[in-house]
Image (cartoon, rainbow, N blue to C red; front, side):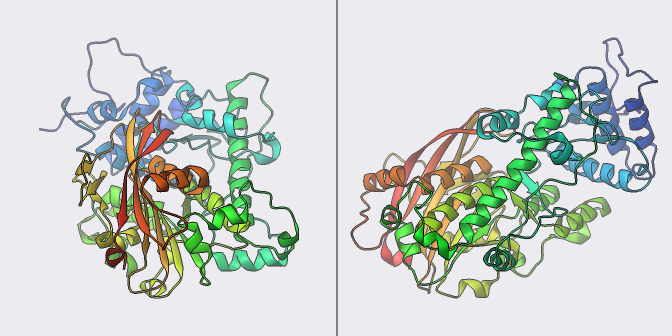
Length: 528
């Protein structure tokens, strides 16, 4: 029999009840939203919203986790296992969409807002008039993204012209609802300065990556948490713009660069002498980098299903629509309205574009959803980013691979070794998901396009950290050359195709280091 939940979303407890103050405007807002038309037909969404808001406003936000929400807010038993039941993640997505809907309709005049950033369950309260006057959860301020920005960014962003209207989306933590991604559906980028850039931008299919429109906010006092939050938002905005700029620069090959000293540390001679780049960049045919599709990954998680490459190619993106609830169908349709680029993809694409630039070549970038089977029936070269879960096109090449992705009933990916060599495992299973310390795996596969003369390069991880590590190794020419030599692959001999299996160590949802645990040279008959 289902458990009866209180309106606050928490179950009865022997501990003294601690409730938010009825006069707290943040709690009043949460109650108004719970009573709105957007929420009136879903008691679970009301319970979820009020529970997480109550916990944060009572100083217990840092204790929120998937299991706790499932038990306390959604009526799951104490034995509930989030790895087998993704109800919390599903309702977290629904909740974010309903909040967005509320603030576009009934709550459009609200000056105080609630947001639950992807990657977390802790609600964030902020004002559209003054972003520094509402306390922010400390658990978000200590996220892995803070560290990454502090280490990798040297920009001095100003809150007056770079701050975002929404809080920073951090790396995945307790919520595994989606890979880190940059939402570009509402982004705008000014026109490139040069005619060559304009033409390339129109043809490349790039998603413009910048922050949402600026927020007009009064400056916060020095040392105030709100100022730190705005600084992070500003830094992320500048970082996104910088990533797009780097990517565009690498893709657009300006003729003037021929007479200039290359700005990258790798010489053209070094670049073309290492596989797979020696084969790809020496080809007279174009090279296409196919970015993954975070929205398709999201839909498969939301619907607890898998999308085949056949359905994906035929634009059937929502499986078994008639069996889905109206809420889930609406979310899926909204996901398909925009085009987003995974943050890890922009980083890898920028590194690949820099190698192409140093070899006087260019890379044409496009999203997986825009590819067609007919595109593969050419002698062009293709670089695919992401696993079959986020890019179904990768599964087209399964029969040529020794290391293949498999998906369990809970939707988690592992890598199966169909031709294990001595001292190799038959299956490699990631652990430590959801921001924990653990391990993951990734593959680098260099194969020939079946029945064609073009080359295929797959950079695929069981998660974002895996794909990122594969991208790092394939663009680190000195280390790549060392690993290929260990495998007995010569850069001066005949063309050879291969697979590398990477073991990735993760710390707080970030790849701390990686190493190659297996290398398979592929027989030419298999490669064909």
